[in-house]
Image (cartoon, rainbow, N blue to C red):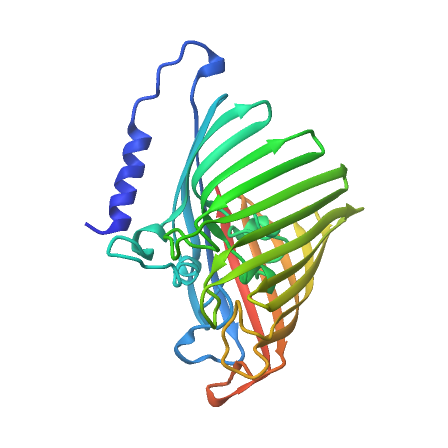
Length: 359
């Protein structure tokens, strides 16, 4: 029996189980089932060999119709307890878990890559929750589910920071304007442990008005850089987002340090609602990792690149989202495929179109 089949059997058994008895409506366990499917076609004008597009985790296959992400989730909720189990598959899953550590014989990506989230939480006080398990990252604006992001492709600051984590977190909603999180984790996007220490993180969201949100987040732990041995990694980010009339915008600045080396990145995104069913989205960005802490290239300047994208989103009946986007990247070094030729080039242009449905 494969790990995915065993996970699905467990999932469907949970769905079929009888509901827990409850004395009153306030203590009854509420359940909900949700899902998401995102299929895509991407054309990379560099025509990378073997169709694998480098330096991305989304729409990673060139000139190919494929599944980016599909997940099915079961959520349980009552006043003092909550839980979520979500199973997943897709090319983005394969890429994101490719570096999952293997220590011993019972760790690695074979099973955990099919678990998007598996968390249990308990209410520890007024506005305070403690959750533990495998969960989606608190770092950054952009998440794994494409329909929740302003653009279909992810910015470089999103691609090169964690999408998922494993550990425990405390979330305190201090007021309607302030929420804080404290995290204790195995490490930087890994379920299996790869050293003898744990990592910590903090995030605070401040919403001074209905039109503006400000965020600070950080990460501290010993990690394996892309090039080198274990080092203490300290990462920080500042984020802001808001609305101005029919337009929404968000901005993010990341900076990290590891063993005397550093990297940084930033991204700015804006979208305009052209009609109730149509939106235009744009992004500009930069990422600089000359010491190859996060991105290994083996080239003199490391991964240093600027980027821009523009896309059209169309909402269709049945909660279907159709997104089409053009993305351009230009690096300091020659990092991208050149129409199947042996030599690499500095620029890359990709067109992506996607259909996604949520239910």
